[in-house]
Length: 122
Image: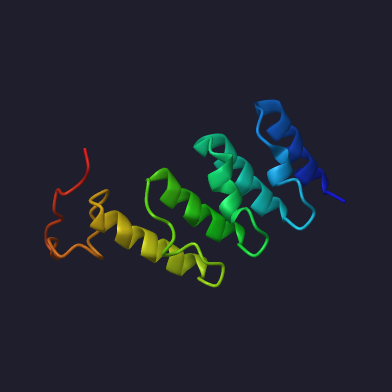
């Protein structure tokens, strides 16, 4: 039913006290299970994690949603399974810039080719 690596993740989840029923499902790959376990441990918000702990999300998509949650962003603009992970990353980074969490010269209008602005959250 589960590979040896998946079994290991289930055991880790039990050891650290997370709800393994959220990710201990045969429809998840090892990579998806890892992302869900990590989010459960780091976010400490099982209800939030359940929203994207679905097999239709790739592990990379789950990771992008996790990063958005960690930053306190509204992930609804990019939490759709039909949005590729790379596009999710771009949307997340744009929102981080808008929220003032980061300054990314690729998206920041205050930056030019010669200097990078110091508009970074302290």
